[in-house]
Amino acid sequence: MMGRWNGMWGGMGWGWLFLALIVVGVVLLAVVLVMMLVRGSSGGREEPRPTGRSRARELLDERYARGEIDTADYQDRLQQMGERG
Image (cartoon, rainbow, N blue to C red):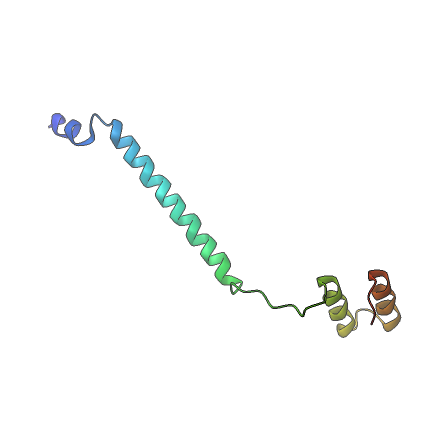
């Protein structure tokens, strides 16, 4: 009975290698699945930005539109960024 196992796994030396390969494969599969889920939750796409506008300008425009900053503050910040309103 013991000889049969030794013949099948080559003295268990190959058995540990086989087990290690299975474990590595399962871990890699788990990592890939998690990455797919994370990417899928964000929609996998970014909103296109209008050309010629920086992200800082977009954020400033959004704050102004929400009423978080007044017109004078908005124009002052635009001037600091080197842009015109």
